[in-house]
Image (tube, rainbow, N blue to C red; front, side):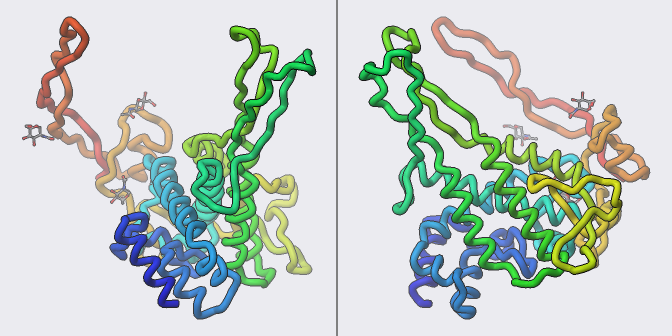
Length: 346
Ligand SMILES: *[C@@H]1O[C@H](CO)[C@@H](O)[C@H](O)[C@H]1NC(C)=O
Ligand SMILES: *[C@@H]1O[C@H](CO)[C@@H](O)[C@H](O)[C@H]1NC(C)=O
Ligand SMILES: *[C@@H]1O[C@H](CO)[C@@H](O)[C@H](O)[C@H]1NC(C)=O
């Protein structure tokens, strides 16, 4: 136990973990405490499988924390123009994670995706001891005698990321079959699959001066931005589910809807209203949020301000201007103060 605390302190010192409490919480819902300090302290008490991870594989915990961080950033980015903007302030996120809405589902999925991604990346970069990059050498050569396929692509080891992140998150789940646990497990899997199913093939040509007689290919991770966008689409198309009669699985609430695939997001509770602040739901309201006056979409003032209208404001910004090209070869610019008009929700 003391060893673990020492370890976490070290992580704090080299600032891998944000140790100020207000920021170290990505979520503090019962099912998701991503502050490794807490993860390990809790695990120590419970003598669970996680204790093993904490004690034996501290470097895995480091990647898991990194994964949770990129997930938080991506969630904020994907939802920056929406009524619910994935703000990770504790009083909001804690409430979001206690429920089982679309938003809850997205947060869980992107978190699992972030962990898968970080672990897979660390693996191929050689920063983890017990794994390495995935060799997927597939020389497509007409000349089987060619000696040119010595080079093997070092692919990102997504299988390792998938397996480890699953092990970690599953070890935290209740054994039960209540619909919330089933939904949680499903959305974690959807998150991991958003990484695994979107690996990109990269190839390199060998052979005489770019003739490409020998090709080596490998799989590389998608950019996490892409994973975020994929999951955001899944959020928009998420299906509401209810428990089946035997209580061991779930089924779409509207029976005419086809069964969600393992890559789709599901939820079992309607989202609260995010227009006005409400302590009980974690909604912060949209008063004061900047909106786009010309857009008819979710970022437009009509939708974002929930029909309350928007206020026109002049703000000062500094822009680069008067850029000149100097022979040779640099560009110099000035900074010009400018007034900009923005709209923010009443
Ligand atoms: C998200 O919304 C909250 C509440 O409206 C606001 O205080 C916060 O600044 C927003 N965050 C971003 C990144 O826009
Ligand atoms: C506002 O919305 C319009 C129309 O959708 C879009 O063309 C424009 O780029 C948006 N402006 C900003 C600042 O996002
Ligand atoms: C713009 O630049 C000036 C001078 O560098 C600075 O004093 C001012 O605070 C800046 N304004 C903004 C809005 O960043």
